[in-house]
Image (cartoon, rainbow over all chains, first blue to last red):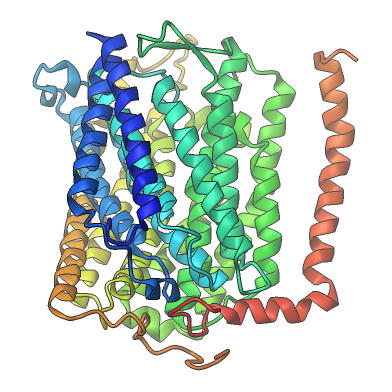
Amino acid sequence: MVSQLTPGERIAALITLILLAVIGLFMAAAGRADPLGAHGFVVLLSSTGLIFLLLSKSNGTPPDPARLLQYYDDPTKLGIILSMIWAVFGLFIGVWVASLLAWPDLTFDAAWASFGRLRPVHTTSVIFGFGGNALIATSLHVLQRTSRARLPEQFSPWFVLLGYNLFCILAVSGYFLGVTQSKEYAEAEWYADIWLVIVWVVYFGIYIRTLARRQEPHIYVANWYYMAFILVVAMLHIVNNLAIPVSMGHAKSYSAFSGVQDAMTQWWYGHNAVAFFLTAGFLGMMYYYLPKRAERPIFSYRLSIISFWGITFMYMWAGSHHLHYTALPHWVQTLGMSFSIVLLVPSWASAGNALATLNGAWHRVRDDATLRFMMVAAVFYGLTTFEGSFMAIRPVNSLSHYTDWTIGHVHAGALGWVAMITFGTFYCLVPWMWKQERIYSPKLVEWHFWLALSGTIVYVFAMWNSGIIQGLMWRTYNESGTLTYSFLESLVAMEPYYIARAFGGFLFLAGAVVGSYNIWMTIRMARGVPATPMDDLPVSRLAPEAGE
Amino acid sequence: MIADHETLVAIAKSWGLFYLIAMSIGVLLYAFWPRNRKRFEKAKMSILEKDDRPWH
């Protein structure tokens, strides 16, 4: 890590870390007993820790100039490891939260373990910790390969990766402490939000600077998706988090918006976080790793372009479908509903494009669990986007909203699409990154696949059942025109589904643990064998020497 | 011009519609323009080429 930095970059890193340590110290001093003070210490300790690492590993020798003839993959490697750690942690918290609904005593009377605090810990860990690290790691890999250019320098990728994880730690530890700005998927408070903006701008800078150095004239479509992800997430994050802190010494802040405007801004953010974080970024992943693993070019490149612009321009307007039957003007609700339905076109174009790419390689899908992960991801992507468009229709939403159906829908997307495409990608990428012929154990990949698939199916079916029952019980009237069921009765009816859901989540977690072990053993395999940097991709490919 | 409800609805229903239609036509033209075909064919094959180190 440090040995690859040039002397100038080491100094830049040192200055950045000292600056960060000073900021941490100021936060600790200004915050005192406030959670901001505790976070000041987190910032101070992590930056001083990195200063020690930097100084102890800096031996004054500049890195080998021959490195410039290779791609810079060290940040990608660490990103994969961090992503898997967050996956196991986030999924574990998810199973815990799910169990809380069936067995409420599992909070152990501790404030930090209450449902309201654990839930954002779960969502942030899996979306931003697992998903975000996977996106950063793979985007840097795809960017370099498709541009045929090395990253411009060695410092900023580390700044982005480690800075991003600092944000995740501040966010997650804050929720345990009770810090939240009560905006879904944007619970982190103002100081963490400002830090993420800085990290994100540097991230976009890496992308632009590497593209400027590209040797390939055309920018491959995966990069368009990754760039849309980075750019739009920056925009959403800044606008939705506009807030005034109570004081510079307090973690608490108040939103710049109020009432229904605040709700609309939040769901414009929230839905586009799904669109550009959980969809566009992972579509970028799919458009590169799926053809690569299948050893077949994407079915239609033109279709991928059309669906790219469709997704980019349509998704922006769909957020208001989260606010049906609220104070939001009726026409805004209708706008969101209409765009949600139109969105089915680019979504199915992508899902269909992926499946059509595999057409003719089904024997490989059958034999190769890694490719099967990607295939199942594309299927779930198609199913979830259909379901989403359907649920956005106002009368359907009157049944589904506030019920577990929504949770089922989200998890069909998050487990079935996002996590599956990520695991497939990692099983592809890990042997390439650590210069191994194959993953440690293909059998364990099979295990992971079936655990993940069965977990997802159990989870989604449990939530469909409970959601529809809930929705129907809440709207059933008796002859005298009053509600037939009390809320409590609907809650009691949910218990078996909550247990089934926790079990489904447990299966998925077990799969992720198996996957982490497999990846870890592949990395250990690499330790015994000296790396041969000129053979980055040992697997056979369609046209091995083409373009050389 | 006042950014009230009526004005915004009018803009959304007229200009919003036209710009999205124009954008769609633009994208379709770009994707299906005959001269771009070769470039897209090359792009879709390019990722399958050998890519173990940067080009210089």
